[in-house]
Length: 96
Length: 453
Image (cartoon, rainbow over all chains, first blue to last red):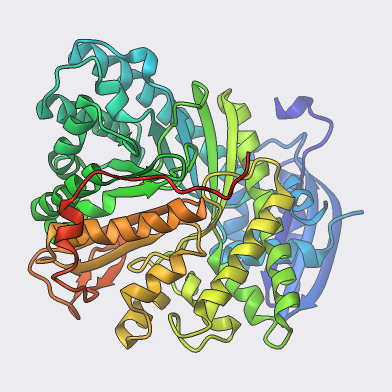
């Protein structure tokens, strides 16, 4: 069903300590699952390194549960907290 | 306008650090069409329906939890008030207990932790079936694990049914005696003006004004509100109210989105969003600590009622702006045993039963999850209930009582219930309250609500 959708935007959020290769690792993971990266932003907030990555899962080979597992593994290896959430939730919470 | 890193981070922090969750998705199920004069036929039908829908509820709730990354902590079912379902059946305790067992079995098979609705609406009078249900409560709730009960003993329109209040005092004592540390009493709440669509246990049921199925969402988030109050240590109370309102708006919107989508997936109607700050025993997830973060030295001290009223008002306004379907109880629970700050306040002596009662006149529910000595007479329990429900009747609001008379414990002891239910310090209560007043029975008439149409 997901394949028929035009786009399904999710937001990947990475928090932790900045280091070399975060974006490279994530980009690799996304490419191998046929997930398109739409946008990347990063900032230092309250002493946290925060990076958000908007991805389009419409043509992805895996579902969000499998992607989460993949990202958890990367998070464990690089000592980062990585979450992935459908973008609709942010629009609902932050836009009237 | 695209979502900024700050906005994403705010949401992520709410769930990772401040315990933001969808506290419960509760599916209301109508069982009236399953009624029968034969108990086996009846229970077969209700079990089938509850299991089928319960499994679906869990399946879709898991999918949505994964999609949005916000935990859906509890998945529950509420059914048509059981006393109504008992009407055509033989009028004995065994039948009522049989119904409770069937609900319990179905909930277990569907992996639903609590099923609500073993109760009756008796604010004005009791039918023979209502009486049997109340008589069956001690057995029904002590012999089952997942069944929750409720009784509506009073309403602003009908007044208070003191016959039922007196009866329930004895019921509670029996139930306490049949369960470890009286814990069975945590599974039943009695109400004035009970809402028909409240998703929170123990009082949840599927009211008679509801459709066949209705999905109600309970959102919590004391930790989120606590954090935002801590972030604003010096602003005045007008500004503080605004800050809380904005935060509650955001979490309510998340709840509404999730509720609507879940209802659509299940192909049932979406009921209401109940935005109630409900504490858990996790550190930082306490309503008392919000009040203390506002500047009250300890919950229960002078200033607490005003602070709680401010909090309630801001929560309701933020919720009402965020969703057109606000309902249930919507406000703040102040349970004692489930809230680390409340427990501390009782132990320090700043929070007494009398002050707790005063606080309930501005909060959304009532005297919740507090423990009293096991030798408290049934008449005193009835008198505590009558006092609390009067606040609801006169102020045209919901009030409830969930009290645990803990056998063999005395004031000052502490009892550990474990899990979600936490620990409760036993609160002192006068043994000789008002037996003569309670023994009069009858009905306390409904108040005049001004001379309006």
